[in-house]
Image 1 (cartoon, rainbow, N blue to C red):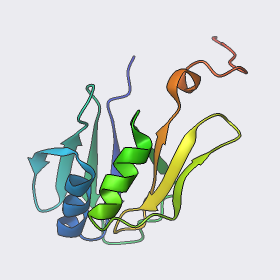
Image 2: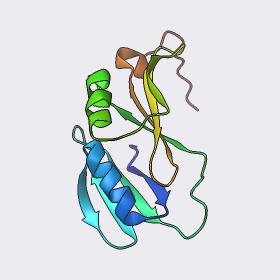
Image 3: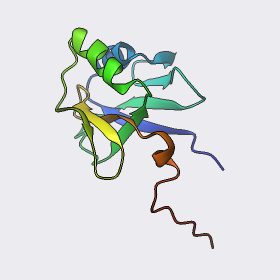
Image 4: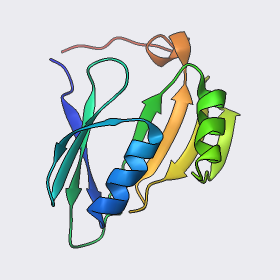
Length: 126
């Protein structure tokens, strides 16, 4: 089993698409109500779906990049605003926080080995 994708609700497709292109993703599907992007590395994709109502779904989407500080600096030079600049977290990840034009919470981070193998890792299966 593998996670296929995450779909985010957006209020304005044109603004949302421009934002995610600015972050460095490649758009692979384009329609008035739906867009899909692939990440620059790996096989992950995510999509945007135009919604009429509230986009505050409580979800947070994470994008990982080893050169986090340089990525954030590059995005700031393009006008991207952050709620939090890269900060070391108690759970051993370094994270920057921002929101897309629809208010979806995004964390840009680097966790290295701790992403899959934190010191407190457990393995439970049924």
